[in-house]
Length: 238
Image 1 (cartoon, helix red, strand yellow):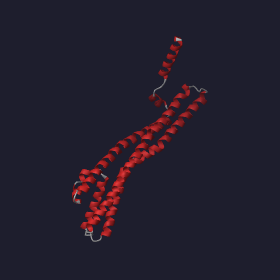
Image 2 (cartoon, one colour):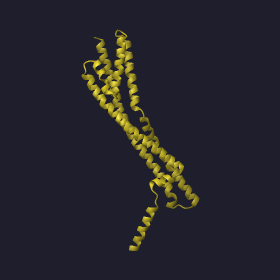
Image 3 (cartoon, helix red, strand yellow):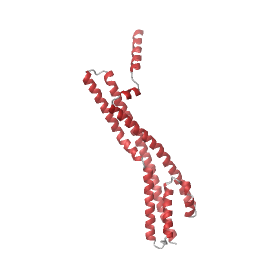
Image 4 (spheres, helix red, strand yellow):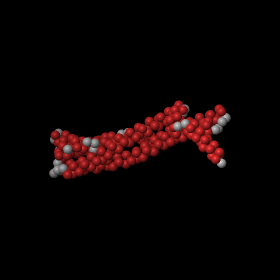
């Protein structure tokens, strides 16, 4: 019994010693599989860079937007708020206010207070245009997350299918279906599947998360634009 155990242990040790590591598998992979793997790795790295960058940007936008709104409603005059805009860099709502204030100043200097139908239209258009530009800026590069989430599994699947085809080709060429013959190609196929999923899952989760927070900020911009227009109308009707 002891002899049998010793033989089994020796066999296992030899098998582990002969089994290639992950890096060795990658370097021995077919050129197509290597291209798929490096493409997926590149997409994954790019996604994580976007995720960290976008998380920081949106978090700063939310914090400074809340601070700006508090300053806006606590201030007595629009001029006071405009003078403090430097404290709220990165807030999309502050940018909307700046555009509205600048447009309102132009209308006042042009003496168009009496023609408020035209003035209201210009002011509303300026607010809407800035809000759209700010939302576009917040959404910048998030589409890459959505693209990665939808395409990475299929790119990984292509690598999987290619690896399995290579395994079948070796079986046909050698007539040998042992694990030593097909093992490396099957391993390449499974690695391609795993990396495809590893790239896609965080990308989809991050895209949905950022999209929800961007919608909240967009709502803040729309609400502020309406409030700003109402304040201007009440002021001009006095």
